[in-house]
Length: 223
Image 1 (cartoon, one colour):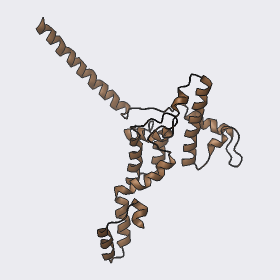
Image 2 (tube, rainbow, N blue to C red):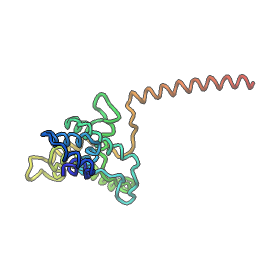
Image 3 (cartoon, rainbow, N blue to C red):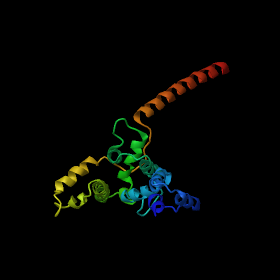
């Protein structure tokens, strides 16, 4: 039962024999620690978080195109469980990992939580401005819903159209939260930090200058 709970896999016959033969009082504790140290632990329990984050490897709706780079977020969650990352850090990275100093590729990947949900490509491609705006509002409600329900345990999105009936959430709070995420858009982005991008650009500029110098030498030889 412990093996199924922690890693989702049955123990091997050899593992069962080793546990039964261990007569020490710490036998169970040692087994718990061994299973928690297994990479399968993160793979098992990350599935629960990925369900909360509405993680998907295709965008849904009419086109349902595949997202070939979605796995970065999946692996981020698995690694966070296996490294026993503090929960407060886990939360901050997924909400604002791309602006937390120092910015890291891991923090950038973490913000994929905000766009893990389905994306209406057809709605976003509408020529009708009203329909396009309505599609955008639905996107933001999905984003607010996952952030509020995952981290606050509240259905803040219910206040989109009216003050919440039971929880003290006025409609104005919904739009304040919405304003925080207005700049979030679905799409691809580089994982390199700003410093890494600058370093890369400097290196490319240096190489291009050397290439130009060699080209001038070739032109002189040819002349």
